[in-house]
Image 1 (cartoon, rainbow, N blue to C red):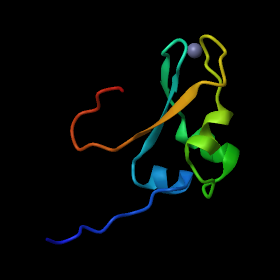
Image 2: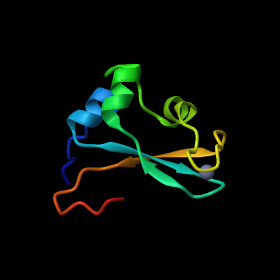
Image 3: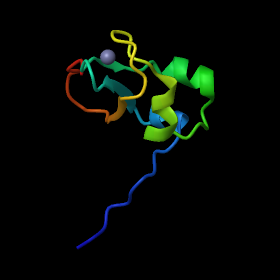
Image 4: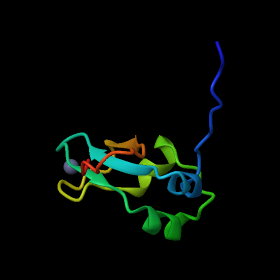
Length: 85
Ligand SMILES: [Zn+2]
């Protein structure tokens, strides 16, 4: 058995470089939105560590205004056609 090499994708710059995006979802109303990576990088910088604890405080739900029950989803790049979510 061989181990495939893994890659740590931990900053906004690396996420963007590898085609990842960040989805933001709201617990109370279930709204889902894909974050604008360029805007995030402009705001926080490429070296900003992107994880649940660092990203979710930056967002509030645009529909219900809730900020405390936001969840982050990492969206991996795919080779197929874009699905939109
Ligand atoms: Zn909401």
